[in-house]
Image (cartoon, rainbow, N blue to C red; front, side, top):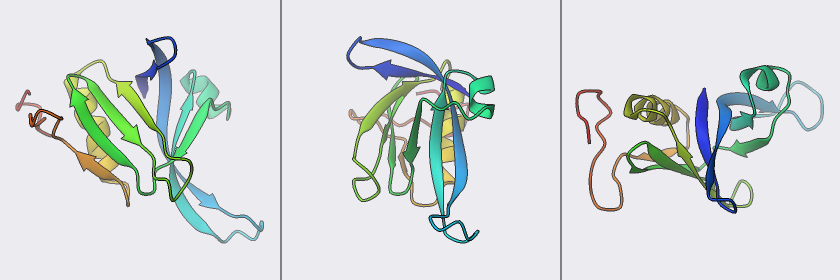
Length: 129
């Protein structure tokens, strides 16, 4: 779904379409290999479906952390690729909860519902932070 990526150089939020996609890493073209869960990004759903990606990140060993309000961060693991951290914002807290709950279902991803000041975002909609 749509989220907003913080473009650090311009200090502005860029509307981006994201999807968590399980992919087979088949380096030899044999139909066998390792599965990886990839966070793919594109400008729109239509571009995503057409394979026009603007970014992709391997989620193995990634850390997702609630920052504040509707903002959360995604840090990739250096063992998988060059480690980097991005900040993403949803439109509502319920969307943040839905994304963070989805990340919890991805093997190897660590999710933190606690911000740097110790406030906890409840996974349940009635527990507003």
